[in-house]
Picture 1 (cartoon, one colour):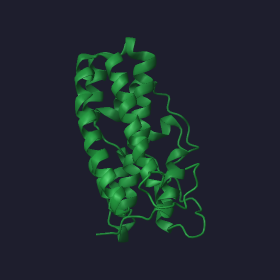
Picture 2 (picture 1 turned 90 degrees about the vertical axis):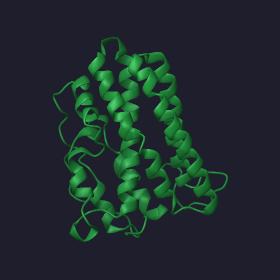
Picture 3 (picture 1 turned 120 degrees about the vertical axis):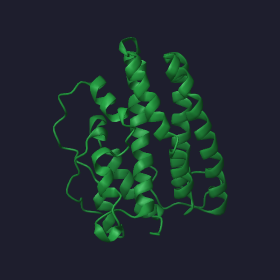
Length: 218
């Protein structure tokens, strides 16, 4: 099994994903490798996606539906990421981190959609969100796997967080099914906080974390 990526190497992954505009999170195209700072693994370059591609003419409702309907996190990029490292794929840890970061961006976009346009959302769109939740639930497993490279105390913290995350994601299916946007948004904020908490632990900001060499702005 390929080793899980180090925190310093993973920092480059976060920079590439954080730079994506909202619409780009649902696009399949991958950009040419970016130059990485000294010390970062060359494999990090493979996860960078196009940030200068033209925005789709598809409206936001259709875009969200396309992304969530199949509950695919990485869409067209998934086959590339799933390759063996020797065949141009990504190390396991980097691939998992990419998935969690994409989950985080998609979850944020869902919240914006529900908050600003819930009155125009129909049964099919809510069903698409329910489909996404089934894949989103697996984010808890990704957290635990990524956490294997953390300190012992951090691993324990991540396992508890992942358990809470899965429970919350399972519970939010109820307001989604009932199309109860208010209850959904309350749960949405809570789950978003769990994702942020995980990234804080990964960045060494947890009380149980050893000193980190990753800049705070990440």
